[in-house]
Image (cartoon, rainbow, N blue to C red; front, side):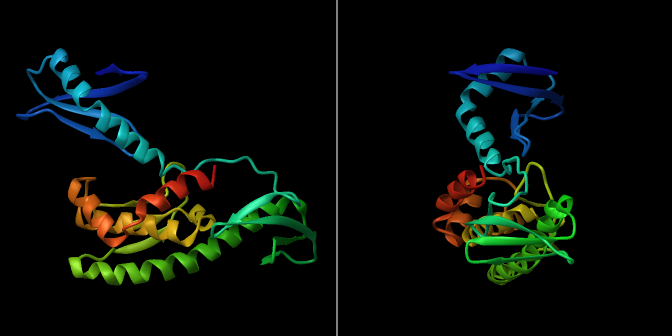
Length: 231
């Protein structure tokens, strides 16, 4: 069943599951949904009271996951339009050509196409190829460092995700959104380190954040940069 509480100007909706357990648990998922697992005889009033007490934490977790959602910007893929690559802005220059290729020089990302309708596809392929190179290069050094915690990802792969910059499965598979190639290298490293920390601590506990701070003391700076850069 579903319910909600009002916390200031915020409305916190949540799903309730009544299960065989002794205590009430609250989970905030990456899609920002909230799930309450409560003992079978728990009253709705007691659940609401608990949610209100944890409301600030719930909203903080939802804001955190929101920062990992790529922001969709409508692009027309025409000359003069601004596009990002490794944190820098470049003007797009579309050039009619007998071959399809992309390169960047100075202020421009030049897209050579046989048909104008192919500009978006060519640019996305170029971004993905660059992501394959840079993500592996940046990930390798941090993977080596994390071996001291007796962990190592099973795989590091690219995957286009609508709502995440990165993820780490329970089996140690780290996925990185190729859209990250548009962000500064430090932002990419922040996401990589964040996911590697999940190999040590699955949840966002105090120990998780302590580890993340140890491995990247200025992670909050790059988290904020990532939140605002690609808006």
